[in-house]
Each structure stands twice: as C-alpha cells, then as structure tokens.
Image (cartoon, rainbow over all chains, first blue to last red; front, side):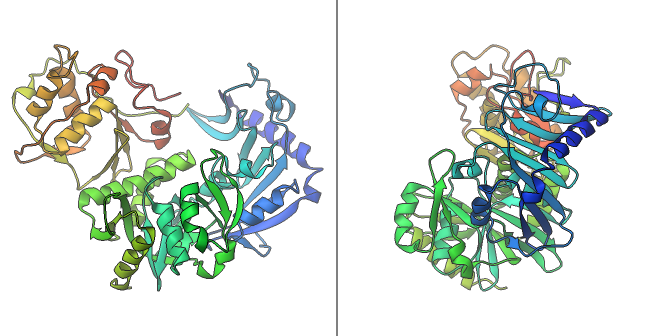
Amino acid sequence: MVLSLHTEQRANCFRRLRAALEPLLPGAEVFYLDLGGVRTVRILACEKEAAPMIRRQLAWSLTAPVPSPDATLILWRERVDADFHRRVLGLDVEGDGSGDNLILTERKGEDLVPFGEVSYANRTVRLTDGTVTWYATERFEPEEWIREGHLFVHDLYRILDTPSSHLVHGACIGLDGKGILLCARGQRGKSTLAVTAMLRGFDYVSDDYLILEKSREGLLASPIYSIITLSPTMYTRLYDDLDRARFVCNNARKDKYVFDISGYGDTLRRRYPVLSCMFPEIDPDAKEARVEPCSPAEKGRAITHLVHSTILQMQAQGDAGTVRKLISFLQELPFHTIRLSPDIYGNVECLRTFLQTQER
Amino acid sequence: MWNVSGRSSKPKNDNQPNELMESKNYQLNEAKMFADVTDGIAIIINAVTGIYYGMNGYGTGIFCSLLSGASTTDVLAAAKALPGAPEDLEEPLQAFLDTLVDFDIVVPAPVSSGEAVLKAEDAAFDKFIPVCKEYKDVQELLFADPIHEVSEEEGWKPEK
C-alpha cells in the first residue's frame, strides 16, 4: 500500500519517531564508517545485539570517530506488527497492515516522493529524513542481517550516490595495481572467481558490492563489506584455502553460507584503480579458461548486466541520470570476456596471465 | 505511484500501408544501445539517455531473431507457423518493429539470412502481441513483470 502524506503529516511522523527514540539514544553504541574516502557514516546502534553483526559485516569500513559524518543510521529494536504505523508514527491508515508493505511518500505537487517503508513481511521499518535514516527490526538473528542484502546496503547505496561515486553490484580484484571489474548478474561465476583469486594472492576489493568513484586518477574501486557468500558446493571446493574465514550464518534463502573474511585484510585494497572490465561466461565444457576482447555487443551485455544488476539488487530508483552516470564510469574502459572452465584455480591462473600482460 | 512515461507497442490503428510485404533486416543500434537477454526477456539501455526498454517474451523472441540476421518476412513466416497464430499477425508485428525503430533500438541492416526462432508458449501467453516499453525510471521496470503483466486490452501494467 502506498500512503501519500502532506508535508505536515510527514513532519509529524518524524516528531513522534524522535520522541519515541530519545530515551534510547544515550545508550547507543556508536560506529563510524569510511566508505572508500567518498562518504562517512555514523551508526547509532540502540540494540546491543546489533554490534557483533556490524563488526563482522563492515569491519573493512569501520573507522575512528569522524567529526561531521555525511549521514547517520539509527538502528533500534521495534515490534513491527500490523499496528506499528498507528502506534509509533501516528498514522491512521485503513487496513490491518498484514501482507503488503506500507510505502510512505510525501506529496510534492504531482510527485510522490518516498521516504519510508514498513515491511510487515520482513518486520522491518526504514524511514529517511535528509541525512538521517531510522531502521528498526524486531529480529536480531544473524540471518536477518542478510535478508535484504548485506547490512544497510540499501541505505549505503543512497548515501554513496554522488555525482562522482556509486555503489554497484560487482566484483573487483587485481594484481600490481591493475584492477578488473567483474560485471555480471548472479550465478555467473563472478563471486567464485573473485574469492578464489583472493585466496591465490590477488589484490582484493570485493566479490559482491563495491564503491566506484570517478576521480582524477581514473576509476577507483573500494570495498564496503568484510563478508562473502558461498554456495555449499563452492565452500567444499575452497575449504582447504579458507582457513582464515569464519562462518557467520546461512543467508536468508538458506542456499549459501556467509563468511567473515576480515582475516584476509592483507589482501584488501581501497581506492584501487580499475583498468578494465570483464564479463564472465561459464563454459562447463571448456578444458581451460580464456580471455578475449569483447565485441561491441558483448560490451553492451556486460554494461547492461552491471547496471541492471545493481539497480535490481538495490530495488532502487534508477532514474535515467543514474544509469547515464554508471555508463559514463565504464564506457571508456576496455572490456574482455573470460570464458570460465570448471577448473576454478585454472581460471585464476588464466586471469593472472592476462593481467601480467596488461600495462598499468 | 511512480510516474511512467513512454510508449508501448500496442497495435496502431492508423491504416498505414503494411510494410511487412517488403523484407527488411535490422541490427542493434550499437552506437547508442546496450542489450542483454536473460531468462528470455530483453533488457535494453540507451547509453546516451539512460532510458531503459523492456520487452515481453514474444517481443524478445522477435528481437533476438532480428539480431541473429532473420528478416522481417522470416519473422512473420515463423510467427504464422506457430500453433494458434491469429489472422491479424502483421499489424502488431509491424507496430512492434515501428516501435523498435522509433526508439532507435534497431537500425536497418544489410540483407542477411538467419533463422527466426519464436517460442509458441511465449507467443500464446502474450496473445501474439509483441511489446516493447520505455522506462524512464528503472523502478518501473522492476515493478513490471514483462511476462505476466501485459494484457491485450490494457497493455502494460507496471504497478504491482
């Protein structure tokens, strides 16, 4: 259900919310994130059970206190039942709040500008007022923190949307300062290639979500999360090498394992130069991997995958300007296809050989 | 709730001469367009404007056939050969092709040969009406289900 509020009704929602949370804030644990040098974020965790998950998932972004963070996330425990919007926000809405989500919007002329969502199914609430986001959930099991993607990923996506930066769904690895951005939707071998490369000594940025920044030095990639997700099959294949990874939980669909890889910090790179993009194609019949330049059509597919996958994963508003920005980040880079064989370590060596021939 | 703008390729009723009698070939307008087909659904992005385009399953089959070198008459013949094909196949197909050209998704190509491959189940599900829809906000594309939300009477229903 979409609820359209006038400006005063919206303001009243936030007044009630602030009043309800005021007693909790003095006891909140405070974390600071440095997101690739692009944005800083303060997290106020009003529920102590949240702290371990913040440390596990965001270890590579945690930083010392920042005087003026760009955004604030306030996290608290709340019963998100059918009466939440009445009880906490003072909204008298028809319906019992079961089933569908409640999307809160502010009417501005002809437009409805969304500022919040109550998910009765996931039992979560997210409300945004300028640079402050309030996030509530009633369940604090580890699986809940991966249900909607990685922790706070939707919020960080919005915070990182600047003229020169964006959060994208992709992987980045490299050698000797020569980074490769892997552009692909899920189930195309992107994450496995990135993790296997990390285990074989490559520089590592991310296997899933990362920050892209268009800077004077070129396109730079930075990590956000210190977790990876692996299918049980891939976990079994990588088991011997994953000695520094710690199991966290299953993902929400229970089809992958989530691991804390903060123990691999020596491989981690921030603001890492992206010199080319690569489009993985799994070829189950291939005896060995090979890298080939992309045709214009393949380059188009790769960019479409990255853009569409990013917006799909975020379920975000992807206006034409956002799409143009992402394309402008990538369009001038060289694109290659890597045909992945079933030999996951052979694939990494193929990538190593390719990178060794590339000029920085 | 989200504003949708753009055109869909519902059949035109403007008594234009039927151009399908003339065989034409088309190719992706690679100067502007990026395209991908996953799970039988085409997603196209205009790199210049940032506008997205989505197709239903039947439209995707036609689009892929054209890109693989099939001519418009090859596509028409393949559609006519499908079980349950209606008499008035040409008009919606021409409207679809006009839309692809109007959106700059395809441009004329040299004469070539290629096989037109259309799935009977997609055509039947989409009632033999290929659809290409423009989305200025990608959110609309995510809310829209290109397979299940199109209907002959109402066209696209992006809001779920």
